[in-house]
Image 1 (cartoon, rainbow, N blue to C red):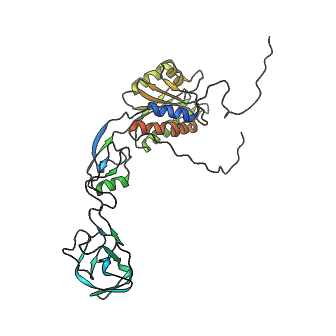
Image 2 (image 1 turned 60 degrees about the vertical axis):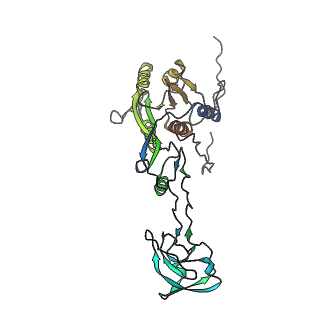
Image 3 (image 1 turned 45 degrees about the vertical axis):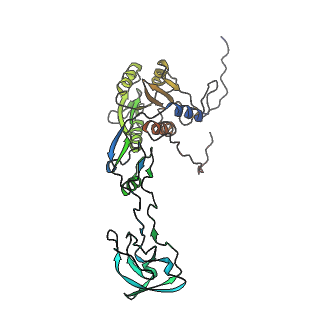
Length: 357
C-alpha cells in the first residue's frame, strides 16, 4: 500500500481552493449585466396610485412650477428700481395679494403692497421685503436699504418649466417625485408592473420551529429574509416554499414557478456536494451560466436561466445568501424590473475590531 501524505494544514475556509477556475466578481457582474433586460409589462396609473412603482416613460410637466412669479414670504412687494441705500420709507398701496387671491391691477412705482406667501407678484412688483425687516404705521412702511433685487421672490418655472421632463424613465417613484408630478399638473403616469420574485428554500435539514427542536435540524432563516428583501424593494414576493434534496422534486417546483415568477431565488444546494441539486440540475440542463465566483462570504453562487426565467442559486448560509443577494440579485432585479442596472454602493469603514484568519 502506497504512503498517504496529507496536504499542508492551512485551516483557512476563506482561501479559494486551488486548481479551480474562479470567476472574479466584477467579471461575473459584467456578464450578468450584459445578459439581462426588462421583462415586465407596463400599465397606466393615477399619480396617487403610483407610489413605489418604476416610471416606464418620461413624465413631462403639464404646467410650470411655480406657474407664475410669486412671493416666498409674508412681507411687502416693491419695485426694486424705486429703492436705494439707507433708510427707505414708502407709502402703502391699498389692497393686498394673497395665495389664490391675486391683486388686481398694477402697483405704482415708489409704493409698497402687502403680500403674503405664495401670492402671485402683480405688475410693478419684482422684489419682496421680509415682514420681519419692516416697520409700519398702517399707511407707510420703513426698511433699511439696499435690498437685493428679486429677493424673496420665486420665478415662474424656477423648478421645472411646462413641457420639460419632470421625472425620468426608470425612476422608482417616491413621495418627492409624486409631489413634483402633482405640482406640475401630471395626473397619470405609465409604470412598469412589479417584478415577481420567487423564493425557494432547499434541503432535507430544514424544518419549522413548531416541528422539532432537534439541533441536527436547521430552521429556515433564508426564506423570510429574502421574501422581506423583495417586498422592501417594491417587488412582488412569491413564496415558493421548501423542497427536499430531491432533484426530480426540484425540477417540478422550478417548472411550476415559471408562470408565477419573473426571477427565482433559491437557497442551498448551490455547491458541488452529493446533495447540491440546484447547481447540478442547472448544470445538467445547460441552464447554468456562472457558478464558481470568487466571493466570500458568498460562494458558491449559481447563476442561470430556467426555461427563460433567471435563477440565482444562493448559498444556504444566511449571511452568504444576503451578501450574494445584495451584490448580484439586487442590481439584476433593477434591470429586469425596468430601473436599469443599479450598482450597489460600497463603503470602506473601520472594523473597530481585529480579526485574524
